[in-house]
Structure formats: C-alpha cells, structure tokens
Length: 115
Image: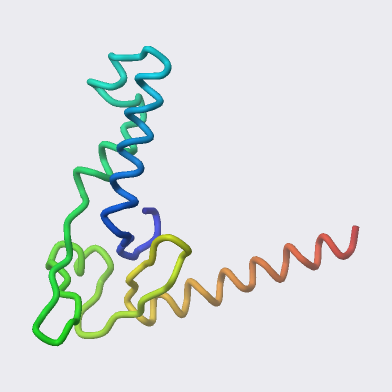
C-alpha cells in the first residue's frame, strides 16, 4: 500500500481477512472491535478501497481512472507477482523500484558477509 502501485488480489483473500478479523474478535469476546474495527482500521480501510476490476472483451483488465492515477499508469502497465497477490506498476517506476531494491539487498548481504 505504500508503493506507487496498485495492490491486487482475489476476492477470497479479502474474505479471509474479514473472516479472520471477525473470528479473532468473537473468540476474544471483543464485540466492540467486531462492530467498530481495530484501532488502526487496516482491514476496514482495505475493504473500503477495494474494487473489483472489470475485463474487456479480450480478457484484459480495465483499470479505473482513480487507480491508474494513483500508480501514474497511462497506456502500459507492469504486473508483478507477490505470492498470493500481485501489483500493477507504471513500468519505469517499477524498474527504478526494483533496481533500488536490488541495491539495498546487495548492501545488506555485503554487511552480513563482512561480520
């Protein structure tokens, strides 16, 4: 959610998050949390922002303008797998992000190797 990308996942993951929050609230006897949500409101915020992505006649995802604007996507997009979810990036932004992530990883590995 902090990356300049669209976070995407299946409806089942959203339902699992909601069910997990409900189950934890009921098991803990915290009915106020069940009704009002957690203090951080993470699950509620994700659910409020979630939208189902439509497909065109050729099976391509149609990005709503507000989502495309968030990720600065215009005519091209890069899809990046993230386990049980994926991200949709503006291609050049992802290339820069990936290069920086690789540099951070290399620096961390060098520090570990020198200790």
